[in-house]
Image 1 (cartoon, rainbow, N blue to C red):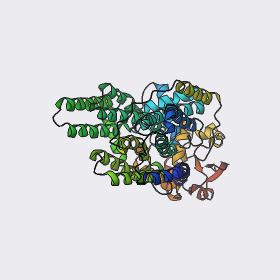
Image 2 (cartoon, rainbow, N blue to C red; image 1 turned 60 degrees about the vertical axis):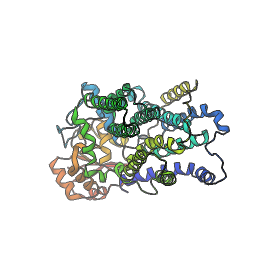
Image 3 (cartoon, one colour; image 1 turned 90 degrees about the vertical axis):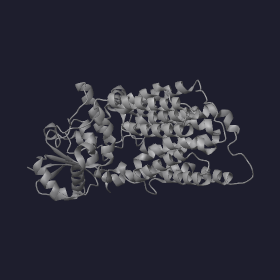
Image 4 (spheres, helix red, strand yellow; image 1 turned 45 degrees about the horizontal axis):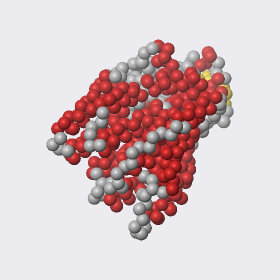
Length: 504
């Protein structure tokens, strides 16, 4: 099975499990909401007496799933992010050219997630893999707390719990130890700030623009923030066309946010163009996370999409047009590229909440309970105290790689795409890794073709780059062909991967 297909299969299983957890409830609730008996299904119920506890317990429970994960370290990109973080800490600067591969040495590279990489290295220094798990659990806890706080403002407790659980069902398959997960909380926080400003018929506070100083150095998703701010600013202008003061405040907020995003990074204006350059790459078609959303792999997403379509069809006359346009855009993005399901889950939930019953005034946000912070601290303390048992797999065959002598490690290697990150992490210069933006379309397609079994291209690159050894996943199509290739022999092998060295 192709590595990308294998990851898609794992993603699909996690998505279907999350969908099954709420499917029964949804069928019962849909039947109740479809009745015409005059019942107010959005009225408070007995669970609302425990709303404060539920609002705090739900994020803690979801953070627990991240802190003691099965799939948090399934992605090879974690490895090169850690390698980049170590390089930045050691050199006290952000690299501008590739310091890692043996195929692209000195090529221009924009380490646009450098801040996240440094933070990840700090967590790793604290407690290894367990420290990283604690870091991402904290990010998840804050994200789900923001979602829960807003859900409990607009919905009775029973519906608020399910709304957050459904969003989590979409997000958890993407819970991988990479910078995008640290950006979840910033995306949720930014969206809440904008929606609260619109709710108050005001502009966002200028101080909120300071989030860009962190976000722009953490993950490229910061570019979405300007689209959201522009849309809600336009909505405010349409609603208040003669309020020049309010318009000026929105413009000032947008300009300040843009200025900080451009000036607070090591790369200047070029950094602002980076997300658009990446989105135009042809090689995205062969990278798993950029695949189209499909059934049954993305069951939870499509279930929510159907619910959203039904909501719009039923209430289209009363729904804010720009918000419907935003939801449509998020839906299309998520269909075209599975990774955008994260935007759909976070921004989509926050935007939909006020649309479920526009006639109701949202309740004041519930204050945090006194036990939430100590409980979260205890969760993190336990995570740090309990040794993390790293489960090796085909992307991280660390035990197998440890058998390779130093004199062989120093030679150029050919590796499968997703294994490049772990090689960077252990100090080996890879043939390719997850930085497809740096390697470019042609090289990425070539590497994928070789792994898929193109032995002729392998021979050419083995000669060109003086390849001395090869590491492949157990199901790479190149593996059986290389076993028959003259001049190569198996050095070490297990159920996850195979290492070859030159026979001579």
